[in-house]
Image (tube, rainbow, N blue to C red; front, side):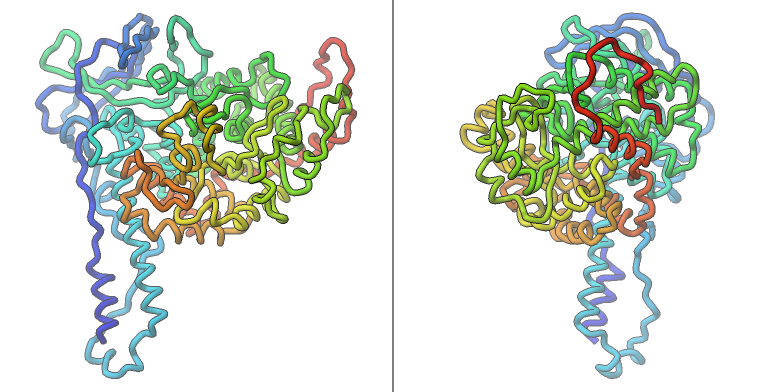
Length: 638
């Protein structure tokens, strides 16, 4: 009887402790700047429904961020006119928690979880008269575990909703972290494009599409601005790394304020590195939005089509590089600090390939796009061939590299990149399992980065950049090296960590990227959702389910950290923010996808049969090509 009452108490009365929302957005005075603006009267306790029109102005404005002054051309201004309607929209502290018909959408989340428990009516006198009616210990344990998992989901949804950022009365994204224990906010109160992806996917899977639509369109408006850093402007089409909603006094009117969207294209980032992955993730999210919501009108808009083409032209532009992979600087993706990934890092190549396929699927057929589509298709074939052939490594390939001859001057060279066998580290010889393989982290002349980078390998599975056999081999390796890649918290961002003199030289003695911390072998819970999508695609969801069990043991108790330290992820990261939004969203996406694996189709890209045929032709063709003028007749068109 005591056991049954305990179950009822846990199931009926457990409510997770939730943190109340507050204002995490600076209202500091700002100069007139290139921005998206929204006007609001001071002292208003209720925000009125707004009618907004976006206009582009051609004028220079000066923006001061930290110690860097930049000059930007043009701004997008939101001219808002207040109406008399006050339908349930209120604001506390400028940009705190906003609610629209809160009882339906933004209030309590109890019951929203699809796998909630149902209990039959319990009669204490009738049902507990004998021990034969008591549940056994196994069912009690299973019930408690289910209740515990549901409570974590409820808490996660509440925290995710509290992280929503509003602009002009509408949700436009989620902040990176909302850590009440940290006094130094830095840029964690901004909306990062890469950080928002799991949040956007979570809301799509819950059928809440407006937030994702708003995010897509507002970041698109930011894309078109002219960016200037030290008198130099990067290529058109660059997406910002992040943006922030700021409240500033309205010019010429002391009684009113306005909200502006203030983007960062890398000019304020640590190291001043442009975010190469932002535009790629934006295209991937745009496709997911259309597939999940069924609303194809967004991707068919002229401005959205133009935005896609600008990103593609930026990525497909001719340069000095001899390879089909994207050449980028260090710190241009999720690993945004110096970690020795400059060149052709796998993460960028996997996202690049995925974005190319997504863009090809969404581009409207028109005469003006013919050359772009032709270049896109040619790049897809070359990129898939290059990655599958030269980035792949398993025990057989490792032995082949071990026996390489060097200094081969020939069109038919086996060791095309002049890799020296002594580059094979002792750790790799011992670590590589007999069954399994993976894509190396980077490839350049005379250099192979043998580190295992998780995001690049997982997204290569999702996007079909690797073959089916290679996809299974990557998952085989993850299972074989579970204690290294998952251990006490999934998932290692890379393995192994740089240590000793190697760490000093490659990272520049970075105190944040010490061995087995942060990007240098730290464990990032947000990678759980990419692991889940990859496992579902290969019909091996049990691997993801096992990782989720590991996460649920401690992530809520640890207050949803950004990352974990030590080789087995036993410590919360020494500089990790708590209540990190993409840690929360990554867990929720994984749970939602395991509950409905069919929903993963919004992210998965199946292998294209025509690309496979072209890939086979590339392998069988003579590697020695004719020299002479380019011929447009040789282009491959899908």
